[in-house]
Length: 430
Image 1 (tube, rainbow, N blue to C red):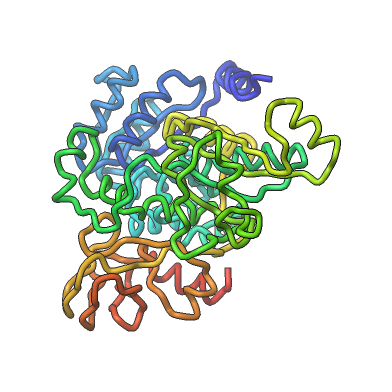
Image 2 (cartoon, rainbow, N blue to C red):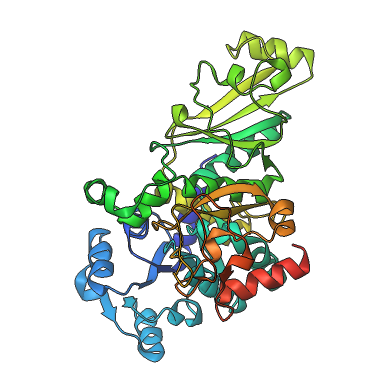
């Protein structure tokens, strides 16, 4: 009971601490820094951010006095500053994994190519790696997880984001002996596969988000990527290309998520889904073949069965990350990791006609959106995972709107770490 709180107080009492490098100080990074100000024995050692003023503001807001913050890109200066009890802000991301005092590196960038580079390097330097960058995890998570196991460190997604929240709910369901049929999340925004940043600019500003980030939410790419990570963890698959997106409610979910032969829409179970009627939480459809269990579930108000809804009607994104930090560093346990390898892929679909020679731009652009499919199909048809798109990914033929893009249509940047990792991952059949 209260294990995390108790253990961290003991750590603090013993004069020890977990020292973190946080890379990225947008909405998620800044809120995490603020939250850590109230957590015993977990401290921010260094914040990596191009705009240093954003990092300083977040640290001051968390309770760190301005005279305890040092700005430097120098390893020697940063090392000395940490030893003297200062907090460092820097634009030199290499310091995050090179500084000996740092226990774990946290990626709060949402940038897949950059995330792949800092993940690989952090693991090579034997740092635990905690990622809010589900975009990167969905495409090269399996090889990063494999690298981390071999290096004796933890690679993990976070509690609080929908994938981690789904897996925590799964952990509960499996822990009490229930069978999971559907793992799903609510969708907060209306779905429009053809949304673009220009249309969403004003709404994004009101919500404190970048227009590209909001675009990735509205066009469905973010939902697909999040469910992709769940697939890779559980071994589940989407029931159909891009999922059904079933409109439901807590009162009707059990009926709506049935097999076709039972009056529902699903062709099979052990699947992932999303529903606009269940936002902002996550939920499972579970079952049991035990009579006494079914009788008790009915008595407890869960209905006649044999299927039941387990619903968590919230997730607190970065505010729950301290739980992951504790579990990774103190218990060597990930919150969510690709235990089953690359089970699914979020592949690229053209939002509009793309001309030969155009750069694809990637997640949140006006060029492409992502749809979830099984990895077997992705490999067989040589499809393009959307998170592999970098600034140098170029169309080498004309691509019509709604085309599912394959690698013969584009030119990848083979020098990017994320491309190399994916090539290696595929060759290792992870």
